[in-house]
Length: 350
Image (cartoon, rainbow, N blue to C red; front, top):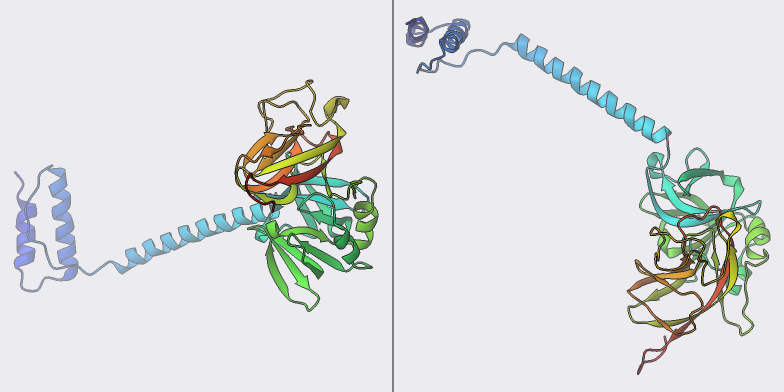
């Protein structure tokens, strides 16, 4: 049995003033021999040896270099994400009306710096692909859907002064700075002040009012006036959902008077009751026919069609209208709908 490790350490501890280096060396040798014999030896812990500053410095240097490498990899990855595909996340729906009359509906997406406008271009996720538009190409960004009211049309400024319309009816002149993550519109008013407004509170952004009058406000079929003076809502077959501007409570009852025809894929036409040519479990209302007029209260979708009876809202939330389909880029046409609120029994109409 080798007792050298024990005796050497004892001599080291019992020494009046062993040098730190000798103590470190003997403690290390004792530990090494102890492990090689696969046995435990109870020893008295020597006085703490002076740290090997050279080794520690080398270790810190290694960690620093490794840390810098990790940081470089992180920054590189961030740069690739920022300068690459812009669609980091998608949120609010919108229709971009271009100055040439084209309309593109989809989800607002954000990229570098959580901005929608990157490198002078808007970004929209539509039908599974990303579309970009130059700043001068877009006349209107429509968040609410439907048609502009008479008051909105009259308030539209002359020339190309930007114009923001809120869902509560208020308006602001100025210009769009950007749309940013968290779904905010950054708007600069005429006094030069930049403020953030939740997209859900914004109805429309007129970026080029002159073009907007020609291709959006006064375009055929866009402004729909009912003979009885009721406002009609235009439900484009190219949009997943169209805002009505109505917030409902579960049990509220509404009448829907809908007309119009749309065309689905491969030229199949559909009225408000839909067509039996297609059916899919991926439709918003799987039990309803393809292309049928549908509604959504909060997160609950329901069929409307040509139902002439009041429909009770299935849940609380914003009321939206749409077409029962799961693909919209190959659709054409629109429905026009008049919505009338029916009072609760024993209550008053709002």
